[in-house]
Image (cartoon, rainbow, N blue to C red; front, top):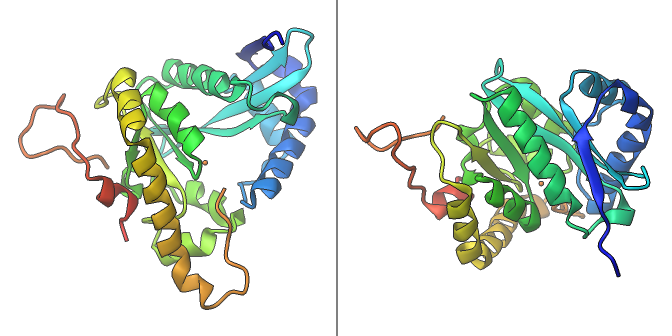
Length: 250
């Protein structure tokens, strides 16, 4: 079977009619995964399109296939690539990776000095992020903007997040810092080498975080997506993180 071809472009005002479809698919996908997301209105998605802060994917026959948009936090110091969604028809086609690459490139071009970050519970998304140069980090390295964390209120795991004072949760945090980062080849190799270890860590982490709540709830939640430099090392020095510190910052 011939592989499906896609067109991934920067969204604009001509794509606003797809906003409702995108919002509906985001909500449907979150329910299927048993997670919550920061709910967005069609008007909010349309605004992102008008601002040139979103990418949209179509088949060669102009059938809508996927979407993702940019959000900024802490006065532009941090950028998140949010709302990644692929139409169920085109999942497992590699489209998610293509959309992530396109929105990452748009983020770097539009906000070249910003740190790009994301939260995920999925190993597949971790792999995609690693291919772009993201690294696993502790929550302390993410934006502390209250508006960002307020978006987690609709997630089934919000109680866990707040019990850990926003220092840990079911999601794994990943970050790309334009001023201090490994090359994509390095982060890809690291992920490939430690993927089984990451998966095991994620399972242990989820078990440890859920354990206290299992005593109080009949149905436990289901899982779903300030840097430090050593001493007087030069600014370009690479960060050396402990995997246990990154995944088990309890």
